[in-house]
Amino acid sequence: MNIELRQIGKRFASRQGQVEALAEIDLTIGDGEFFVLLGPSGCGKSTLLNLLAGLERPSSGEIRFDGQTVAAAGGDVWVPPPQRDVAMVFQSYALYPHLSAFENIAFPLRVGRTVRREIEPAVREIARTLQIEEHLMARPAELSGGQRQRVAIARALVRKPRLFLLDEPLSNLDAQLRAETRVELKRLQRELGVTTVYVTHDQVEAMTLGHRIAVLQKGRIEQIGDARELYDRPANPFVGRFIGAPRMNLLEATWRREGEAVRLHLAGQELVLAGAASPHFGGREEGACLAGWRPEHLHLEGEGKEEKKTSLTGRAGLSEPLGREYLVHVELNGAQLTVLRAGPPPGEGQRVRVRPDPEHLHVFTSPLA
Image (tube, rainbow, N blue to C red):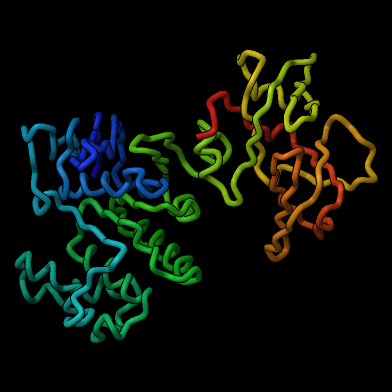
């Protein structure tokens, strides 16, 4: 199923007046695509999912499935949820506690009046795909969190919908189980080829699952792209810091060209970057900017190194062990940098220098949101 959203807006009435949850959303999702809506709490991603499901009506714009309008503002066109051929999985699983896993999965088939002899083969087929066939006679209380989530997914998929919607379905799982279930979800979606829209606030989930990702903030789409594009070429400071863990370092700076090089003034220091940094400034006018580097693109040098304009001087703060790597926090005249270091970290309070990679510089002219 192809999905088109044109100028979608959604407003809710509150005691403080109208609240704009979504504004001017233009979006196209391809047939069979695994599309992720990513953003912080309150950005409008679940509202957008509810609009696709038919649980909410848009305040403006229209929604099309395979070229057919299923919702248009003003009540001109409205296709109710049962006729949209959409299945949805919620964060809370929403399983019937008095029914077995088999009966929970079979429920939408029975409601849809599927021929009785076709129900059991369909349930067992989807249970086999999700590797829960041996748990079909158990009730939800007898299952682990991961097993209950798989039952909820099986119940949604058993009737073979054209559109599969998932609203933060892994949030209740522990870290290891979440990683395992992510792999299963990706494999399952690839096998079934069903168009899938997945909502999450977890950028790791988004980057590992989605063919493409839409980053939302305050009801608007900031950027759409695949994981590599969002990580390497963020459109603005919000996307730069929201995508990636640990997040991008951003410092207020001023800049000017010096031949092939670029001279940056930031954190009370001057930094001269080689010609590799020059293309990142493009046709920008010299002056104020935000300069950003991801932690893996900053390198710590000891105090014994000869002082150069290619590095910044600071003091090492706390370090966080990450197994084979350390996350080192460095203080630069009141500014903070986070550096990912492969070797042992410097001692707290030790004078260090941070050398950034010129070719991995990110430059933004918009302010930090």
